[in-house]
Length: 368
Image 1: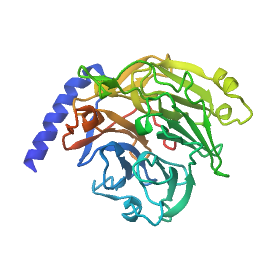
Image 2 (image 1 turned 180 degrees about the horizontal axis):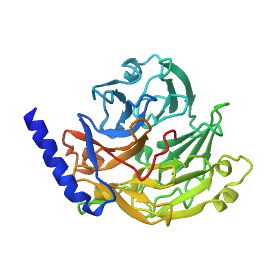
Image 3 (image 1 turned 90 degrees about the vertical axis):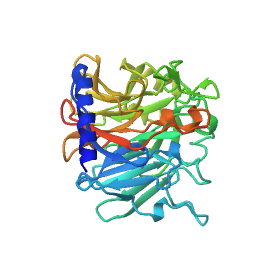
């Protein structure tokens, strides 16, 4: 126990030094034995998080008690166990959100097993399955990789950011996937267009390019969030210099052609190469800056980009989400760049993996 306390004192001291050029300080909330991808929260404030599928975890989704910090498979072990009889289990989950009704929605991108991509909703109020939305091949083609999503309960849609790097894809098929909550009908939009495509801005961490067999991995449409009233969708490719936004009702409007839809997209601000994205009630946008062990913020008042937090242990910050119970933003550090595929077949990731938290500028938006 003394060793652990001493270690946390050292980490806290280092982070205090790093925070001198940041808007606030990062705090180590806890550590885990496996890489954490995205995080959401139950109505009582417990963490529900995906184990990053890049490392092929045994349990895809976990629940951590916010007080005891003990974890268990979520929603249970059966849902995390593959089987041949059906594909109603979690195969390959990264995107995960909780809605205002207390339903945790888990985006299963599949790929890992011979299963159908889907969105699984688990009702935390009665602890049972709410609904499954299947994503057909017409919506999720070979190089699709549904990464993250907005759960828009106001208008009744799931709005999914598809990175376009599944099964060896190069990001050129990045797109949006829209799912109607009432009917389950799915549509694929803006595939390979100017705002979903990655730019030629390779991810470089400590001087090393994130590359597969010598080719830079360029990731398309990735981070996504919506403002407090679901008026706008904010998004951008992981490898890219811009955040874009479009009115939600325009994006889901089936009457628009792709050309008409593209004309309604605004360039909102500059950004670094980033993973997850979140927002607060004043419209400040928080995004994980992969190359600099930090979380950046785009200030609503002038759209300037600042460093919110920074920590040496925040290696590949991935998901960033607001906990409405304690008022903190939480961010995972997944160490994706240390995985075997980027390091000549050798997994260089090290335990433990960290979950950080910090106070946002103002109250965050919980249910996105």
